[in-house]
Amino acid sequence: MTSVLVINNYGQFAHLIHRAVRDLGTRCELVKNTLSTDELLGRGPDGLILSGGPTMDRIGNCKQYVREITLPILGICLGHQLIAETFGGTVGKGALGGYARVTVEIIEPDDILVDMGPTISTWASHADEVSGLPNDFVKLARSEICEVEAMRHPTKPIYGVQWHPEVAHTEAGDTLLMNFVKTCEEC
Image: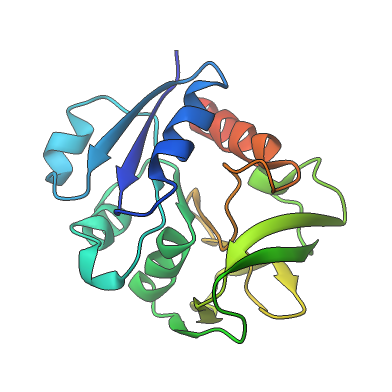
């Protein structure tokens, strides 16, 4: 059975991510972001999900995980932003703070966005957002308020999304999470 670790960055939806992945029939565990890389890998995961969170001050060892672990990684909200920063992208204040419905245009339906249509309605916070795509990263989705709603690493199975696929307000959230689990199975 595929195993995914959800890294808790103290966001209000970390437990929902854990439950949503578990409800897909995937072995899933919510873990602290202060575990060492060896401790994480010792749990035998097939992939990692970096949860959202309130601030970059509380991301623990997440940047180290992104740099050192070769498993598939999905960053959600703050997780998306810390991936961008780790690879030289920029994060800034968004035009729309707080949570709101955002229509996202899928530009590149690659890997995690397969079978999700040209646009989806999502639930997202844009108090902070990726304002500059890291070098060589592929932009997967955009919206009227944010140019980098989703991205992927050019050669590694590392993905980020600004929105929350784990909440009921997001269309095709289960599809995105299942696509990520399939990526974990294939790597």
